[in-house]
Image 1 (cartoon, each protein chain N blue to C red):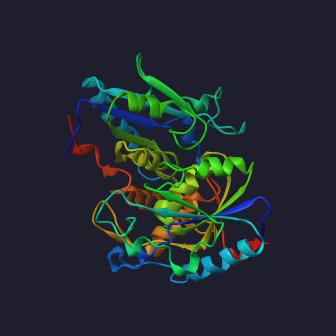
Image 2 (cartoon, each protein chain N blue to C red):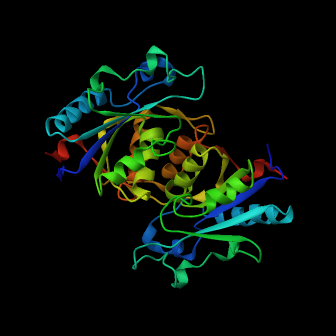
Image 3 (tube, chains in turn green, yellow):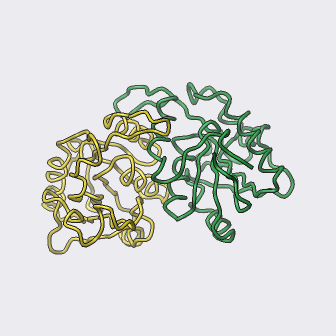
Length: 184
Length: 184
């Protein structure tokens, strides 16, 4: 059980329509967006801070490029009036953005991360978040990864990518929890 | 083949005696230190910049705590006169240190990373390095990881931790290469 304190913030990373494209390959955890919707709804109900991070790629051909329909947030996690939107250009939401400043202004917040993909943007942000001294959590069932071809040409299944990346984070950079662990 | 340009820097991460302790569990790639020694020797022979990063834990009980014999660099990669030593306190060598400043002063260097552990300090540093815009490489046979218990209590073998973490980095944050790919 993880008691969600009054000074908590939910950071939702890159849950954009472009990730529905088949080009990314097989994904694990098809239920992630439903879990995210339910976590988001709890944070809103308890008037806690919600920050929406989106990726604006520097590559013009990317599906995650501002101006394209695939840049849009998925319906399950669409921001509402009053919620902060942060646009980033690299994997880490803590590089080239004011996210660190926002978190510092909150004092010593508990920061909950969820989104896509577990191994790239969620993992990199959570690693930096922990190293910058923020008490950080990653909600594992509210994240998802894609299968990945490794440097030797072997395909690693999405579930392995997801699990190993979370294992590498857990206890070192952030606490990896499940959505049902959250107590509001 | 990767041609090592004149503006290249080798960053060796956390190759300290404390990692020989059995408390870390099973490790992969027992030959890593020999490979590191040979890469280091090539960089020195070609008068390229070498930076030694060491971890000084904030936990007094840690083996990687300044003042303890286990804080020392392993013999295979011991710094020589004129090489830079950077001491860090978190996983990323780019947080709380002047490494970024050193790299920026080099202009647009090619940065080669190797060390221990693949999944924690090497991976986190390489992820940030790529996201900060540095052309980054990780030398896979000059890195090593330990087995890891995941958040569900399952043990993931060291070789899986190593491989999956490299697959998650490769092509996104850094290029994962082997020592024999380096051409001086």
